[in-house]
Structures are given as structure tokens and as C-alpha cells.
Length: 236
Ligand code: ATP
View: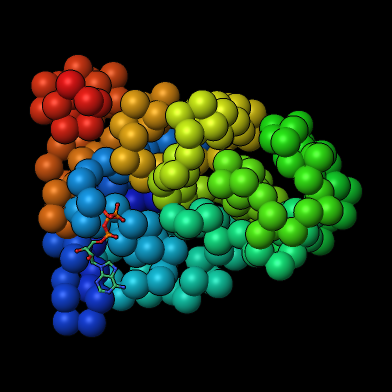
């Protein structure tokens, strides 16, 4: 079943149009990558989904038209956005960040169980529960951002450059945990990533954007083998 579908979506910041007709299909439980150079429109595509940029075209989630909904309404439908720069709350402790993630949920037992799960997924966070967000390393902040988004128990996770600024080994740790989360929770994902090698460890299919348009879409296994992808995104 299709969970999220973008059809010919355009988006603008004021008078400047930056998406020129983007399409994307995310099956329930699937993971789709968005690749592309700086400024291609990857972040804006995530913002189009979460309702934080003005759009035209068609965006459906679980069969329902969500284009133009306010960001809080989109979140309440089960879409969690982990923005570039992570968006963790610097003045709150790790534990409170995780509680904020679950603030719409009523079932305390399930929330407590998910909290335990997050801490098995990211054991580093367990040692830092009472630290403020601001005191965490970049890798820990990224782990917290993902864990906090999970605490909302979304059906779809939007991940923007989860590897940005991290040492390669830390980026791999973060992606390994996200992969485990995907397998164990079945949460669908849209993954924006400059590091295509990492993205390909997680996604089933991917699309390449260039100046706000899809230029190539297909299974990760096929894209990985293409010369133009290797040259542009896989370092050779
Ligand atoms: P990056 O990896 O650099 O974030 P990206 O593929 O995610 O690149 P976007 O951030 O979606 O690209 O940006 C697409 C275009 O929109 C770029 O030309 C960028 O300069 C422009 N843009 C992004 N945010 C804004 C904004 N708030 N106001 C005006 N223009 C913007």
C-alpha cells in the first residue's frame, strides 16, 4: 500500500520557486532516499511534506490530501520530521526531549516501553539522560533527534542529512541504529542524504533531484551501479 505520494509538487519561498514538479512514492513501511547536490531541493521536499513551505500539486498521506495542512496537523497524522541541524531542545535534558516527543500520546505504559527501546537503540543516550541537549556531542544530538521523533510513534519519519558534520564512524553508528529502527518498527522513511553510500544502506528506492526536479528514480540496487551516480555521489 502507498503511504505517502507526492505528485508534481511545486514549492516556493516568496516569489522564488525551488521545486518545479517533484514526485515521490513511499510504500507503507518502505524507505525512499532523496539524493542531489546542494540546493537541489531535497530539504524543501521534506518541508513540503511537513507543511512548512508553500506548495502546489498533490500530496497524499494514507489516502488523505495533506497539502496545505498546518505543520502541527501533519505531525498529528503521524509524520515526524527530523530537520537538518537536528532541532533538539538545547535547554532541556535528554529525558525531557524524549518526553516532548511523546507529548501527544496518552498510553503511559507504551510511552515508557518506547523510552526503554530508544535507550537500547542508542545506549549512548542512556548515560546522558540528565544532560542538557546543548551538552551533547553532534552524534548524540543526532541520536536524540531520531529518538525524539520515534517517541511520537509516527508512521513516517522524514530524516534530513542525519550524517551531517559527523565523523564517518559516528555517522555509521547512527545509520545502523536507524536501520534497526526501521526493521523493528516498520516505520516508513524519507531519507535526505548527501552521503549516498550511507543512504543506500537504508533505502529501497531513491530519487535524484536536480534544480527542483526528479532526474532519476529507481531501486537503490540499480542506482548504485549507475556511472552517473557513482561519479556524482559515491566518490568515484
Ligand atoms: P542543501 O543540501 O544545501 O540543504 P537542498 O537540496 O536540501 O540543499 P534546499 O535547501 O531545498 O536544497 O534549497 C533549494 C533552493 O531553495 C536553494 O536554491 C536554496 O537557496 C533555496 N532556499 C532554501 N531555503 C530558502 C528560504 N528559506 N528562502 C529562500 N530560498 C531558500
